[in-house]
Amino acid sequence: MRLNKTRIIKRDAMTKLTFLTVVVLGTGACSNGTEGVSSDATATTNVIATSSPLSEYADMLWGASSDMQHQLHQEMIRREELIAECMHNAGFEYIPHVPRITVVGDGRPDGLGLPTDREWVEQFGFGMANSHIQETYSPNPNDTILEGLSESERIAYQATMFGPPRFDTGIVTMDEMGCYGLAFVEATQDRMWAQDLEEFAPLRTALSDFYARRNAIITDADTDWANCMADVGFPGFSFQGDAQRYVGDSFSTAFGTYLNPSESPEFETFSQWEIDLALADFDCRIATNFAPRQAAVRWEAESEFLADHQAALNDLRVAYEQRIWSIPR
Image 1 (cartoon, rainbow, N blue to C red):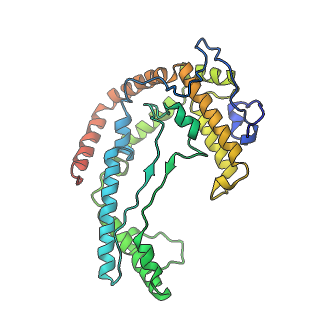
Image 2 (tube, rainbow, N blue to C red):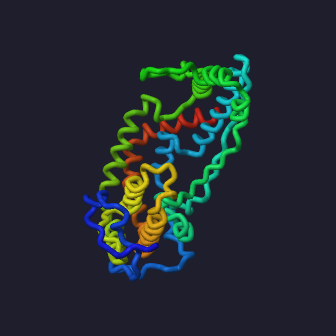
């Protein structure tokens, strides 16, 4: 289903619109001095030669690095082993179980986190309505154990696992949550995440403030991208990130009450609109050489921040590596 072309109003009122007022992708070329928008389905965005100078430190602070994901996995394995031991000591059977999660592609994001594969965008858009994340869980053997218990046995099992039932709204600490809570505390007791350490609080604040200031600046690349978007039928944006944020806000407004958004009669229309808007964003990023230009501005600012906070960042790296190296491989 396709939508009739209308005009998107200015940015400060955009979030008030529903997705039914938004335009579909038109045809044409950008009028900002760049070449026309590419229609090649195999096109990819401009390559960024270098990575963000601060990205690895941000990962250390907020737990997004692959090393920290490995740490989480190891903690989960240890937690499950401790739960099984605790439940066994209480006379119950529990089989350690670590669920598997499979992610289907990410569009080969560049250093700005933007997809670089047009075919991926044609399929998923921004990944809102048509999510590229597929969660694949292996069957939990403990579900079968619970099903085989009588009602009284099940109540006792759950109380041992998560602590006794509570009917007040007070705060419950992890060590009051049965075998699960005790196992969680022991499995994570050696965690070293800078987001949890007071000594790195000033650095966290400084980095958060830096990102807020940096993201509030409309760059020349943003302006050229916005002009291109207007030329192909999507006016009203100021920052390149506005398009994806607008889709996210519209998705929440349209489907926030649905457990399964695809059951909504409006889902198909929204899905096609999202893909059209995402393709416009993709093509305008190519036409305006957005990624390298934006990265050059951001990397320069980040390099200045790195120079001003080098000592604190060095301390962060030392603390991080000491913890990561101690995690079993």
